[in-house]
Image (cartoon, rainbow, N blue to C red; front, side, top):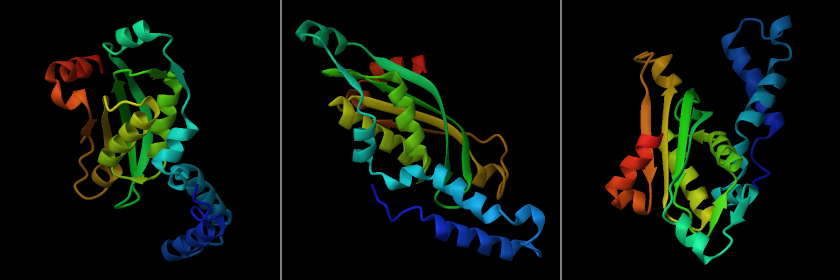
Length: 199
């Protein structure tokens, strides 16, 4: 964990400077406590900045080992998909909100399976960084590979970006879709199609 990141005092200073730049009276009643609230907001929503992918993998490595060789062989042919995981993030280019994000994660078990709630927690923690949607997918993919001891992982994400919907082109309904595929999901088109049909 990087303890130097997310310095509350600095964030409060930045919040105060921001108010001074955009409001004639940063000391008015409604804004008095805003620098503290600003710092608390970013401390919470960028928590993932403090951790590497390996540290997140260790944090959520709650797996169940398969009981015997027969079960391993059976499950190695199965496809596990968890979809409709809702997260949000902030883009590193504008610090704008990435929202209405839905993540789907698929994998083929090797010698272990992960607790389903942990997949959602991994996605949420990866979103709590200054991010790109493409990197969210590759980060989740990498963490899942570490935990599951397999390269056979796929991550599909769709979401809206405040930097497109609220400013610039203001394309309100624009949706960005990305996928991060590894292992057999890259090479087996039939499996890839099955996975996509399930999400």
